[in-house]
Image 1 (cartoon, rainbow, N blue to C red):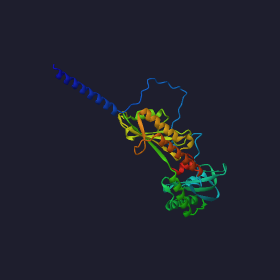
Image 2: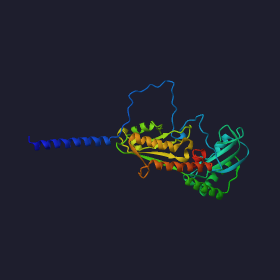
Image 3: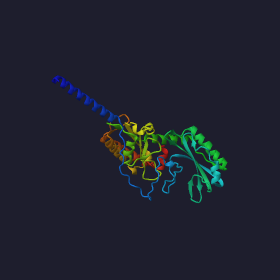
Image 4: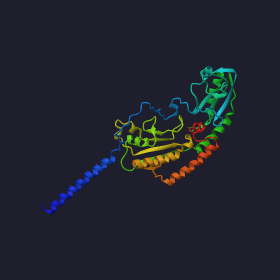
Length: 341
């Protein structure tokens, strides 16, 4: 064999080896990363027990330490006193309640004054009440209470009052609608829902790989496929953070073969108390996941978010917390959670 022929053979072999290596690299890059398989499983002690974790506080079972459902408040509700001639049973009040508890897009509620506890409460069977009040929320994320919704509130409250032989005292509609617009303007200017997007820089991720890495940071499965949450320290409170990825990937026949190239970390600022340090934990979670999964942190437009950018966001949030506190609508409080919903 001549040296020329030998050279061609060697060159051909090198090209073939490079093609094989490239195809292997491409295949590895396009194959979603899989979760690590534990080699040793420690047996669980029979006495151990884990309470279930819920994404939505409304789905959680009653717990002794659970926060009491917030009642009507003049700060964010239209209030209408209802005078009754004598004590009314909780059973009669419940029978008089309207079938739906909304006036348009705003929550509607009735409370009774329980003489035994000297507190307002949602009517309960077996209790007796000496007075009632009806209320409708002034604003939420759908906007301010308008004239049509106020009129629907009046109709519902009047029907309830008639059924229990009560006399309602409605406030002026124009005054309440104006108050609703002012509250809505404040809420719109001080609402904040943050999101970080983590994008894969090399190999894609499988849903199991994402879930395993997120679980190491304290995230647990949410109620919706493709969603995880970081639970709050108080039972029944909304989650501190949310983590979401493509629902279809999570529901695939073989999720291990689903390729994810991004996920989203989210924080609903008014819903979470500042004592939980939600932004600090969001920032730490994003950095830890990006490092462990070979990803970068970006905003919704795909722009990389750097440390100095996060510092600015954190500073702005502290000012927002102070403003909400001054308005008696502290982030994570029952009133703030109702208003920003």
